[in-house]
Image 1 (cartoon, rainbow, N blue to C red):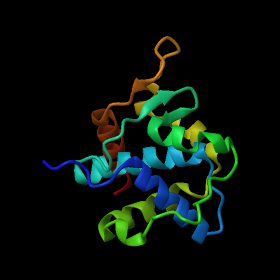
Image 2: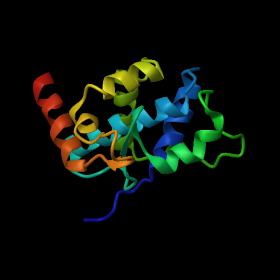
Image 3: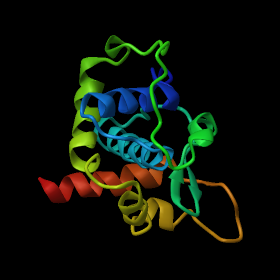
Image 4: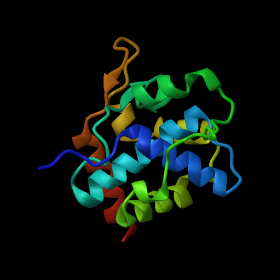
Length: 155
């Protein structure tokens, strides 16, 4: 199977660009949670990862470390798309765009802290997080199972 067509950074750019069109502010914390939900639903619906970057169980919920480091200088402030950003809507295929819009519609209206609290009740983070083990990886198989069961219940 070919590797995923996207990096987590590219998907984060999509969410930042989409938030700008919705006149919404998007913090690093909120981007992290949206990446988690996008990856989870992609795994459940398509059986493959949306991006190769790992999700880790940090104290404030799931985090993609590469994206966290990219935006950490913004702290809890809104992450802007730089004016010279090379993002294009055409960078993301239509089927993936539909999935990302659905994730935004379902989760984008929540605050970053509400999303954080929600992830703390969900099995992929709960089964991975430990005070004794920093940066534990959240397995794709646990995400696929969890989000797959959510899809089954909602049908």
